[in-house]
Length: 126
Image (tube, rainbow, N blue to C red):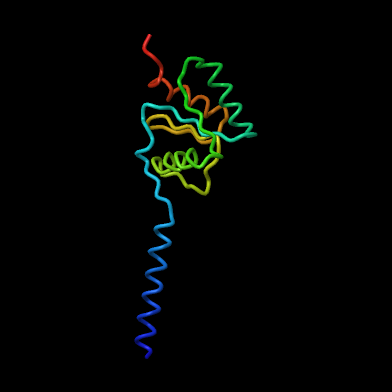
């Protein structure tokens, strides 16, 4: 009888684990196009506003895809970016800018300098 109960309990645990794994979304970093600059943002984020203003002022013709993370599709894309760069998802925030082989998380003067360095690959040839 103990053996039957053990087998039943074990089977329930395995089936529960399988269901839990099916419910956990798997994000693919291959959703991120290296030729695109993704700017993940959220309303009322002052750092996002500073970064967007900086980019618009210094690079007015730069093609940037702004993604509001309050939509499920954009949040999934943000997670894909985090996966690509092996970022800790518990510490994700906005702005998150993914550009080719580089990313910027947050915004300050040092991130602006990093952006200036990384954006060179995305500027049209003159």
